[in-house]
Image (cartoon, rainbow over all chains, first blue to last red):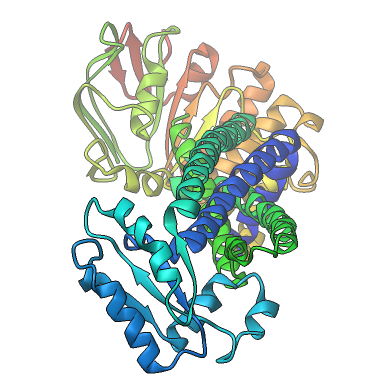
Length: 301
Length: 225
């Protein structure tokens, strides 16, 4: 058993060295494509964060000053509910201090400094208003009225923020997904070619192996390991890219801090780690499978 | 040990390489397959370790119909069959010792077995002391001895030899034949394809003669003709 393991690693290493150019090409292509795959996830997550406070058809948010008494909050609620033909009363949602804080924590993942400053004496609570079907325009007309109520801090409308962000998000998504699919195909073709070249260089050896009774798996495993290592190195490289660009991005967003809602574009470290793990695993599995299939394809010598 | 029943092999649906071949080879026999190039000798050999499958008929090796054997069992079949070729098929980047050890390594034999069996088989083929040479540092006859060592190191039941003396001068070829004869005397069944008349006549073993895919003669203690 041990001699087999030794054999497999020796063969894998020798094969990687023999094909340096192709190996490097395969690794770089998979690194770039995996970077784009990971980057797509990060960008989508950022946009989703940014849009999440508008999820569920929310078209208007009424921010209430932290100092409002329960009676004053109730009064605002009654005014909003007094338009049952415009406002979908069943979906009207009030985020008290705890829920507002939870939402802020999510949106401010990239800006823990700002989050730390929030407390009961400055964080506004909020009403999330969903219009009845087709009544968005009427609801917009009511905004000024709500804005004038006691203790209402400000009223924000979805159409100002959401539409542009959604457009941008869809555009970015199309581009990154398209590019990463193209590059992934390229990476797989390169891994395939590397394995085919490696097998051609060793066809005599493989022929002898088959004649003396080596199993197909025994012949295939060093090649699969080679593909797996290419995918692994590609994945690790792409993680380096991801960390680097995520840092650039975060710094850039934090510079924009004036309008605090954009900090939601930053993703949390735990999500970044998750994406990196996925990208590495995906690279390894795809590399191993591509070369395993390539090896089987050329095993009939 | 080996039994062919009405075996027919057709390449690409048109070229008939073998037609209705039937014979039995007993354990421990030494058999020559003779006949001109293209008469089907190599195809017969390739049938016996399932490098080829017949269109019709059955091939039995060691009591098993190898054409009905699942692919996953073929490696185990081949561990019982040694192969020798006209062009030796040695790995040029490996030493003599590594070439022979390779055959054991790739079927997962443990190191201590390899350490024990490789020198023993080197003695048997008369190459003791040349373990660290590379194939290009050896004569043709010596290279063929390495390939015999590789084929025999796992003590197979059967040895298939395809023109093993084809590239060798007569004297060297005779040496190889003496070696194969000794291996045969240990109980290994040997099947050898050749068109080396002199050698067949010298050995006086069973001769199966082929002509355009058909067995035209099967004679005990035969000569080439």
